[in-house]
View 1 (tube, one colour):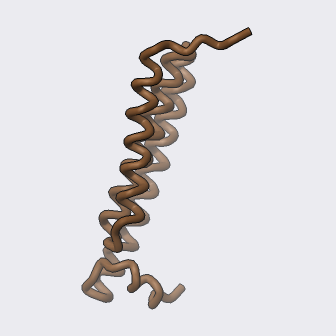
View 2 (cartoon, one colour; view 1 turned 90 degrees about the vertical axis):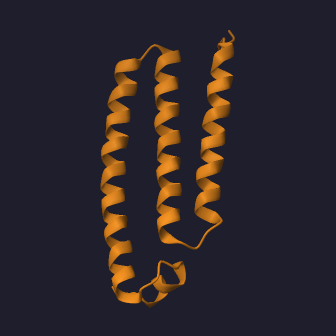
Length: 106
């Protein structure tokens, strides 16, 4: 018994993969903490997009919506905490370079 995957799913999957690679590149190619946070945001948006597409094609939109809401709540908490850490680091060192995190206490 083979599972039939609609043709349009591959288009969505390619878009998801491009977002994922873009987010990873944004995180790995820079030393600026704000750009790394933007990369994490792009990664979370790609996961959200994949959940919506998977829910649509599987016919379980209610489950997909519940998972997306959970991901959005987690994403907001992560952004607020990381932005607070970045702001504290900027006030202490006047720089957003990743190397300054080695000097943090705690």
